[in-house]
Image (cartoon, rainbow, N blue to C red; front, side, top):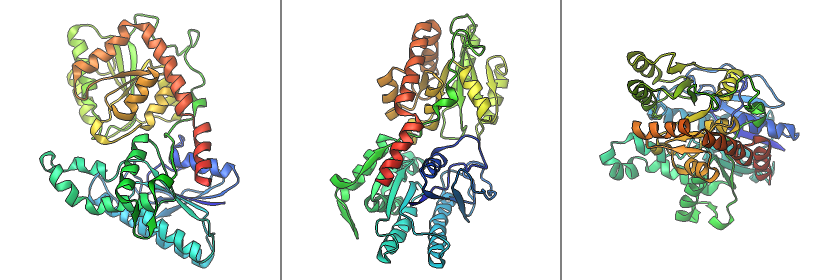
Length: 430
């Protein structure tokens, strides 16, 4: 089959050595013998810079759409970027189909966000069918985030209830069209699929895309990870053994972005609290980058915590990330509950490394943690709540060891890409 993957956000193969969702999905399809094109943007969502062309790799190719830059993850500039990506995708795709440089797709997999791109894909699908180039062409909408729901958070809190439905009405209509027009819907969280169901329940039939909720195929596939990266799980004889059997501090790690959507300062404050009490049962490690890092480092310096109690590792490559996670005892997730995030990438990395997770996100991730007894939860912004969660493991090494095993079980059951991406590919091909 000819398969198009349309996502402008994930890092490309020439930008990272850690495959994310869409690189992994492209590799899965290519390994099955399909012809795969990944349509992305020439502007990097992560670095906020123009991208270099990505040569063909892993038996698939990457095509970049020219888009304008943006510097904030939520704002009008990003929406303009999304609009340009959608229109550029349609223009380049239709031109390629017309001159014969592109073969008609059998499947078009569209990530959501960005909004508006699915509508362009529907036009391509319908034209391909009408011209009998590929009468079985289908569009699959893959939900990565709850757009435009997350945009409500940027509105003044006292006005969200009144302004949100008015200001964001065009974006809600775009989301509705995406869900109703899709042949199938997949998502990185059950809460996202439930959101799609709510949109479908409101409409049942819209415009020229009639579709009853009961006939819309839905599929859950978490971001997941490569479990083989963490096959060297800690053991008593391992040279990177954790400190669970000694009086040394437990090692707690935060991995990933340090953007405004993360509640990170309480991690520094809890370290300061322990220092003031004269007892420091854990050391906190940060690996990653973002706009909060300067403030976090400044506060750590001010409190006299750097190096001994709080360690900043910066951006790490895959091997360094693996080493850090395998040398740690606990993992931290600080996404704000209002962010609408269902289950972030790092949750799978942590679980695969056998780390109990301490999270303030709640929601779907909280349900998984409770289901597998693979960590603890604390209240966002509450230093005492976070301190209590960390202290619990210092006082109960047996709990730490049991939850470490449970975390690995959760990773094998829910986050193993070898299994889950084959299932997602089968759902898409159908």
